[in-house]
Image (cartoon, rainbow, N blue to C red):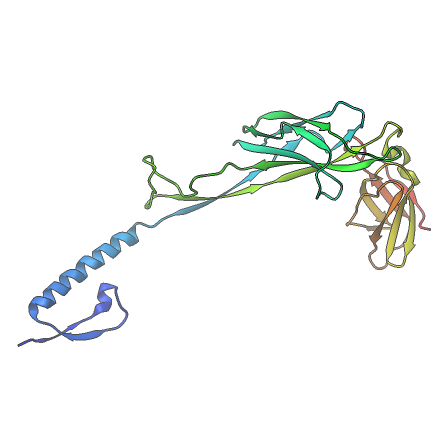
Amino acid sequence: MQNKQSLNITECGILNVVTRYQFSKKTMLLLMTWCMLSMSSLQSIAAEKIKVEKNSQEFGVKLGVSRLIYSPGSMGQSISVSNPRDYPMLVQSRVYTEDMKSKAPFVVTPPLFRLDGLQQNNLRIIRTGGDFAKDRETLQWLCVKGIPPKADDLWAKDKEGKPAVNKAVSLNLKLSVDNCIKLFVRPESIKGHPDDVASSLSWVRHGSQLKAVNDTPFYMNLSSLKVGNTDISDIHYVPPFSSYTFALPKGTAGKVYWTVVTDYGGVSKVYQADIK
């Protein structure tokens, strides 16, 4: 005759309820043995906690200049590129038109290469065609991007190449950074520098907007802009023989003060003018 026995399944870590069954003594012993073995196995797995280490790496280069002035008749321009990190990366370079969407008629050599950590190389930018204006500058963009190497597996492996289940695991976040600088195609007919004529910018106010009028053949790359005692934070370059409109904060009044970026990446003196 079977005795009525009670087995608490929650003690085995399998269910969260108490279930009552009718068992023989032999069956009861087998179940208890199985339960103890199951608990031992679960405790062993729980003891092997996996520690995940999150690492982030930035892949971006530094360029030797902040802008390039390119003469259409030249044989090309060179620029240095360096890897500020202590690990290698691939470097990819290309030139875009002003809208940064279409490819410009330039080639960069080498277009793709490996740059080891803390090392430097030179890029050569060469014009391949294009019909550029002869009475004004044309803006292009040189973009140089750092590319991380592709890993076969983001999870750490042991010396035998097997997953280290009970060891530290690294999850790497790799950030690819695109560094773009202005490339100005400046025809030989244009003499001097932008800061020589930056004072000729004129300013017209229309309600809460301020229009900058540029009657020169240069791109006027504003470094700072202030109206009275109010700084205009959202500044933009003013194209040659064109204009650009800035939004003015409420209550802004007074003269306009501005500086421009020079051909060498410096900042000009402060210019000022009355608003028309």
